[in-house]
Image (cartoon, rainbow, N blue to C red; front, side, top):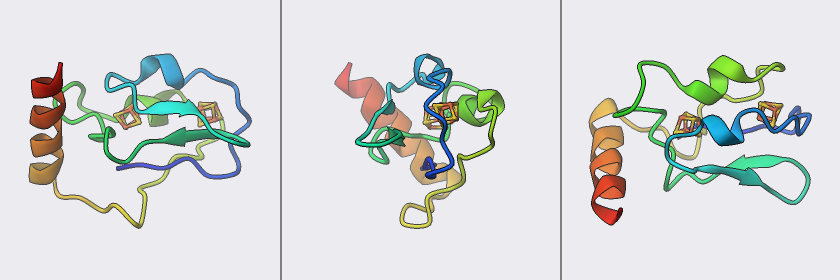
Length: 82
Ligand code: SF4
Ligand code: SF4
């Protein structure tokens, strides 16, 4: 999963781009739910939030480093929930 750092300027452009509804406004800035972020695996070739963020504040979450396979499994789980 990816994460948003405190460099976020709350511009709100990433939130509607997320195919997994993983992004929401947090206490001070936007946050990514690691249970929902597949790094866009299953939807796009590249993370859409990273593509669009004007300040490049969306790195990999060091608490949630995941293999492509586990990201695929998360994608399948989220799809089954729909
Ligand atoms: Fe959403 Fe993709 Fe960004 Fe993860 S990488 S938060 S799934 S847009
Ligand atoms: Fe924050 Fe970047 Fe999302 Fe804008 S696009 S709300 S700066 S994380």
